Amino acid sequence: MNELSASTSETDVLPETVAISVENISASYQVRREVRLTTTLRDGFSNFRQGAGSTRLVPALRGVSATVPQGSVLGVLGRNGAGKSTLLRAIAGIIPPTAGRIVVRGEISALLTAGIGFNRQLTGRTNIELGALAMGFPDDRIGDLTGSVAEFAQLGEYIDFPMRTYSSGMSMRLSFALAAHLDPEILLIDEALAGGDSKFKERVAGKMKELCSSGRTIVLVSHAMRVLKTMASSCLWLHQGKVIEYGDPEDVIRQYLRFCRLEASSEGLDDE
Amino acid sequence: MSSSTATAPGASELSGVEYVFEPHAVKLPPLKPYLHDLWDRRRFVKTLARTEIQGKRSSMVIGQLWSVLDPLFQAAIYFFLIQILRGGQGGRGSAYQMTLLISGIFLFTFTRTSLNDGARSVIGGRGLLLNSTFPRALLPISSVYKGLLELAPAGVVYLVIHIVAGRPIGTGVVFLPTLLLLHTMLNLGLALLFAALTVYMRDITQFLSYLLRVLFFITPILYPISLLPPGIRTAMAFNPLYPVFAAYQAVVGGGVPTFGQLAGSLIWAVLFLVLGAGLFLSHERAFGLHV
Image (cartoon, rainbow over all chains, first blue to last red; front, side):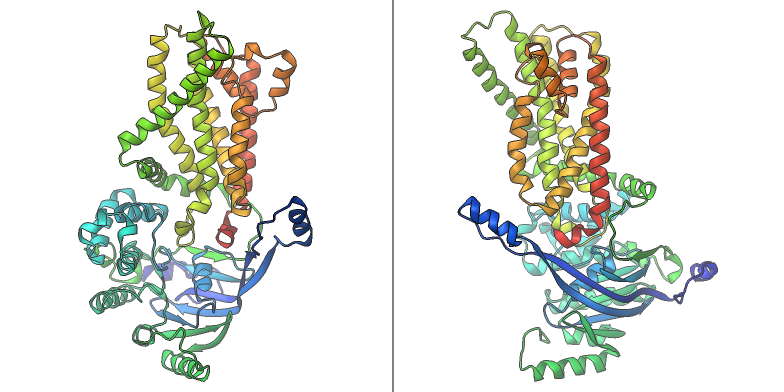
């Protein structure tokens, strides 16, 4: 813990044990409205003047705040389009917030979505290499990394096959394995546990516990309530870009499920 | 396995880095750390360029072979076209004409690759860009590096052709490294500029093929600059590729580049590098919103 005592001299409002502090952030995407293929130049010109091809601002997050202590797991839940992925991207620094501030302490690993697949024509091995190199992983450890990732993801000889030949489960296993083995201080996982069989899920859970116990912090977006219940130290429920509930996982999940039942909608309810 | 993470028993190893993300303003990131980050990730550039050459073709060897053969075929076509237009009076000048043509097309291919691949590099790297944080300039830099990788075997092939054609090698060759450096700077500037523009306007990639075709004809590749009337030669100085290609042509012909050509190459290279890097770096934080 010498690191913590070393940094007490800094004048900082945040407690030392906070890994991620999301302070009232908003984020919006500029979405280009689709322009119809115009048959004549005049149509095109009038479309242009009316701003038919212009962009529209779609808010994805509105005033979201959260604090994630070091070594804990924040579970994020909500229906499709609630802003969960946007939140992860904002924490990773991939998209800038339009308002508010995010403070992140520690190196973040590649954010996971349904698959890293930088280029699905390339082999799994090359994708691992490119992903790791882009994140600044030391050159001399790339070989070891590829080995451990392939072993953890149980890809076998497929590691040298193009990623387009992978099943979705294999892509997800590869994604998780890579992110977890990049030695991140903060791990962001976006629905990556949905695929994969129960045996792999056990390995994932084990790996995540191992990371947490060594002071790593995890933000986990999932539709699988059971995963959130067992893994998360706290939960954040997003709906249309706003925080509805934030706190104890049991409470948040119970309220979320009740909301979903009230909505009489099963979408986004992936609790196998 | 999992050697990388298992070695961390406590929080003592944490790096202590802190990132603060605030609303995006169009401004340059601190350059020194940015360049340091780029240098740290230089192997990414090498790996990406190499795999892209391998990518479409099955192997590196065939990939590089094609990158030499394709410009050679182009040169052959233009050579015959020029012979026909001249009414078949090739004679003594044709060896000279051929070396100009081949060297010009090889060198132009470097610019073409930088521009074409560079413009697509950021939108094409969507998968990586949306999932990880890294200095985005790595992507267009890889495109330019790929162009350089393809130029290397072409240079060797050209040298053989030059010698076989019995063309003299003048003192001008000492200028080649400088010219190549300025040419690379120009290409990098163009790649950064067009990569950033393409994020906001996808149509740029369509427009590029016309731009490249125009550039090809207004750059001294198919003709020696001595054929140009003085007025046109002056007007052509506004083509960013003109000075460096005119200088290359002087070296290929066994002569020495003029001061004007060298100065022009330097001015265009610096101008586009500053412009391209400025636009790219000041906007790259927002790329995630647009790709």
